[in-house]
Amino acid sequence: MRDLFVLPGTKTLPNRWFIVLGAVLVQLSLGAIYAWSVFTPALKAAGWSKLDTQVVFSVGLATFAVVMVWAGRRISAWGPRKLAVRGGLILGLGYLLAGLSGGTNFWILTLCIGVVGGAGIGLGYVVPIAVAMRWFPDKKGMITGIAVAGFGFGAMGWVKLADSWGHLIAGIGLANTFTVYGVAFAALVLLGSLWMVFPPGGWLPAGWTPPPKSQAQGGNDFTPAEMLRTYQFYLIFLTFVAGASAGLMAVGLMKLYPMEALQAAGMTLAEASAVSGTAMAVFFSLANGIGRIAWGTISDRIGRRPAILLMSATQGLIFLAFTQMAGNELLLYLGATLIGFNFGGNFALFPTITADTFGTNSVGQNYPYIFLSYGVGGIAGPILGGALGDLGNFPLAFTICGAACLMGAVLIYLVKPAEKPKAV
Image 1 (tube, rainbow, N blue to C red):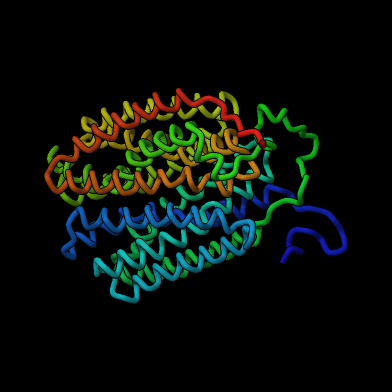
Image 2 (image 1 turned 90 degrees about the vertical axis):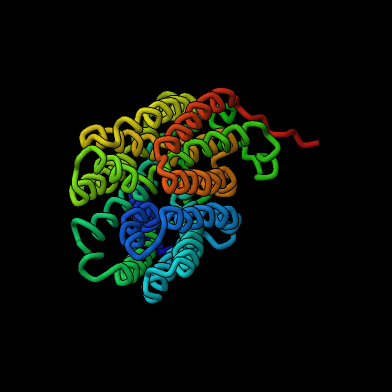
């Protein structure tokens, strides 16, 4: 299907912005994992504990991260389009099976949405990032932010379709909502994958001259084994663990915790549910998508390390303050917006600092190892929040994650340019 991108009989390439369109379409579906919180009230009504709801979410995140490492190794052999297609089909199958099973069995949902769905996301996620960076070496931060913004914006759409816009859960039930989403996820990824191809070898944007290798690192690519022997890898990894733990805990609890805090402040259950749902589905999710683009663009101007330091420090302070914000509607909206904005920045900044530090051409192989930190955070953050929530202490969970983000700011400050081992 290469002729979709190169006109028959010519060597003309398409407008590279079509690649961005494909990347966003793929990520809209993969963002399904962030819509999980909209299903948790129905699952709690079916007898699930708060911890149960977070276990499925954590399994999905961990599977996503682990499978992504394997996918990074396959991107060269299979090609980006085939990898994206297989990821979309597996993601869709997981949700389809979850729906057909009845939609409320803990073990079935853990398997279908957590393991199968997470594996599908892991297969597809690295593709838009690696492809977009190859087509836009001159705007890596901004374009990576745009490419992954669909992940955040997609969550908002899926949440609102299931809840207040489409009323799918109320209208057709939880199980049928899973089924509909499975079909939709697969269809969108298949469509977006049509544009998921690398540019020809040696291609550069018209009028752009690459900076020296010492600055760009694009021509000085580390293998995964070489990267794993650098201290920079571990500092970047731990910084991402802190940001991922905090943000993913917030994703899982952005409805449950404010619902309790708002009711304690005098709201009815229905009022608290509507306000907290809006905080998650609109303010957090929209800011999550915008933050990816904004932080990526900022990093193109001030550098990756200063951008991550600023993002981590502000996120830590907001988490510490959020315990005083969750019970007030306006402050809740503000807190959800800021947390979502900073959390989204992780997904533009960590791929690009990986590319800058260890090479652009090898980012498809190297970034999955950095992204394992997301899997660690996906286990630590949500389960910490769920366990402390069952004990009635949501504020402590937010305080711990805030302190972790501040520590991440210190760690990223220590990262210096990496030197590739010399051949002997």
